[in-house]
Length: 269
Image 1 (cartoon, one colour):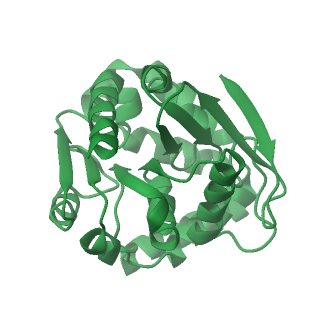
Image 2 (cartoon, rainbow, N blue to C red):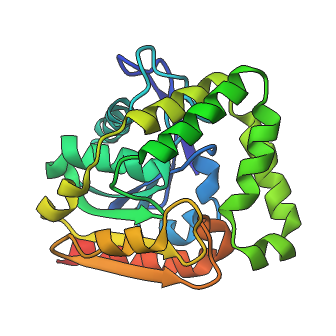
């Protein structure tokens, strides 16, 4: 795997990984992660495709944007990576916050998209209740409460059975979450609060849309995801039993197979 660093007008340093060869796919991580979240699916995808995995600006080895952190700013950095790689068309798969970024990319650069995969994500905006929860978390982090915030949030991302049987995975994800700076956490949460509803992107899409949905996802309600999964012209829907919000860790082989099939379809039709 190769790694690169580029600079954009809004983000002094954008770090990304590149593996494999063939048609490109971009993998965008969620919160409070970095691109290493995809490590269990990258090798399998790289057997068939060129896999581009950035750290979103503010996460991992990428610096925070110099202006406000927005989903649009994160999407612009992704576009800069593609430009650096001379990639005109790609499939983009986004997990959770990475899905919000992917939707912003779809709105701004629809002509570059061959397909959009939303992995435990949603096109709707935050509800007022969700915004209030995020604002309370921001206040906790500002007061030095990053550790209790991360320790309280991470276990809730996983299905109950997985959580009971894989405590070491939960512990590792807590460690990784703690690596994200408080400033980045606050910036990302504000970006999530301020993101608009983008369900119209789905109904207007000329590209296929994939939905990866965990039945035990406590972040993206099952019924909401299912309602949205019918909006596109070409929708792929995978419903995972005994999976929460983290299929790339809970059922990586299943996710890999579904991503491979979807990406291949996007390039062959």
